[in-house]
Image (cartoon, rainbow, N blue to C red; front, side, top):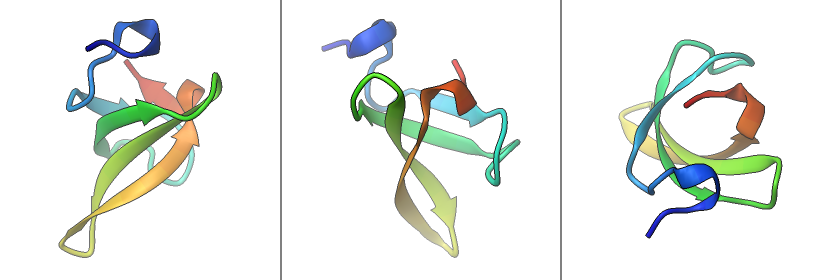
Length: 58
C-alpha cells in the first residue's frame, strides 16, 4: 500500500539536509504531514528516526 505522496514503505531515500545529510535511509511511514519515520544505519544497527519530510530526497 502506498503512503502519502506515493512513497511505499521499504523505499530507499537519501537525506538531503540536516545532521544525516548524504546518508541513505529506508522509508517506513509518514508521521503527520511534515514528518517521516525512516531507518538509518548507525553503530551497526538500524535506528528508527523521525525526520522532516523536506529533508528527504524522494
